Image (tube, rainbow, N blue to C red; front, side, top):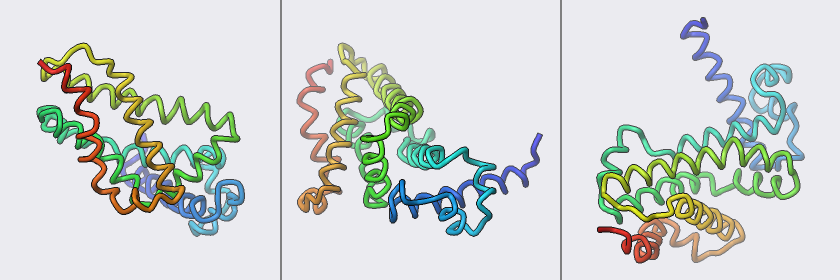
Length: 205
């Protein structure tokens, strides 16, 4: 069993590599960035990267796994989130990904979207390892909220996918240069909550 010091070292080295890869993927693009470039940016030998990641695709997926963990609600805050009324719950549910993903101006998202359009293997891996687990997690939060508030007859899977698609579309439109979206981005959680409530509130007791 690895000791704590060794585990901490390996985690720090892994994050060091991911930070370097994220920076270069965003600046140079996925295709043009090489493992050698990433190693140089991280200040390590090329071969060291392969001790942690099989290839560039694995690096990219690891970056998104790390980003996914940032947009997951804190487990300690989950009971309070679920206990809130529908507007509070929905606003918080939208605010976490919209605020977190905006922090890097969607540069990594832009890289991955462009790559997945032409890379079928990456698209399949992303769906299996990133998208599906994220959707299932979100469904779990909605189901817990619905149970606590005695709300039924909701197609939670479809609701979650619709909200996810809405967020993805907004991110793409932001990347395309929609200045109004950029100016009002921080207002979106409240605005979208008001927009979506009419459909959801019909199912409340």
